[in-house]
Amino acid sequence: MSDLDVPTTPVVAATPHLPMSRRFRGFLPVVVDVETGGFDARRHALLEIAAIPLDLDADGQLVLGRSVHAHVEPAAGTQIDPQSLEVTGIDIHHPFRLARSEHDALEHIFTGVRAAVRHHQCQRAILVGHNAHFDLGFVNAAVERSGHKRNPFHPFSVFDTVTLAGVAYGQTVLARAVQAAGFEWDQSQAHSALYDTEQTARLFCRIANAWPAPTPAA
Image 1 (cartoon, helix red, strand yellow):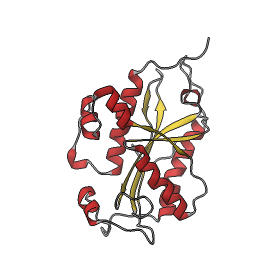
Image 2 (spheres, rainbow, N blue to C red):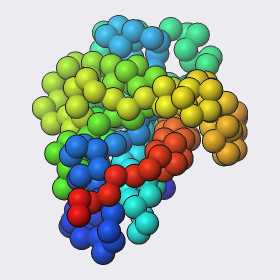
Image 3 (cartoon, one colour):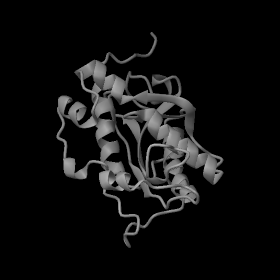
Image 4 (cartoon, rainbow, N blue to C red):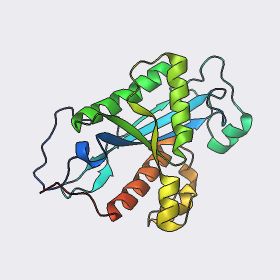
């Protein structure tokens, strides 16, 4: 995983499987996790964001694409609940945090997402998350605050791994769902946006790949 750009030249797969552009009605699933200064998207600060566009392997299985990640400077007028920092462990004054302005952080994330959308010839991205409307709410609030004009995500539709994991494994807590799916969970890395995004992406791929995939029409 790295912040390298996703290749922008479309690749025609030499497989009988549906391309991503036809797999989810033209939407590209992009897994997102945010770390924040509280629970209210309009009032509390966005502090960290990570995104992983999903890809397809040669067998038509969903796999993790390349990640993009950014620390975010609290936007003017937003608040931070000290209890939220105790949960996330974020030190907003750490000299090596290298946080970006809200607009620049979004542009960094959105550039990688837009490149993946173009690569797969999709129409736009759809956010995948654990309690996905929470993450989408903070993304949309940051877009509105910063005046960003090129948000690649669907404004209200999501894929939520809480629901999927509840159906597949009877678990709704991310750590338990990830373990039920057969993956390791490192609690010391939890509440890092990039780690939680990677684990959520693995969970989504495991569940989706277990479901019979649509195939091209004869």
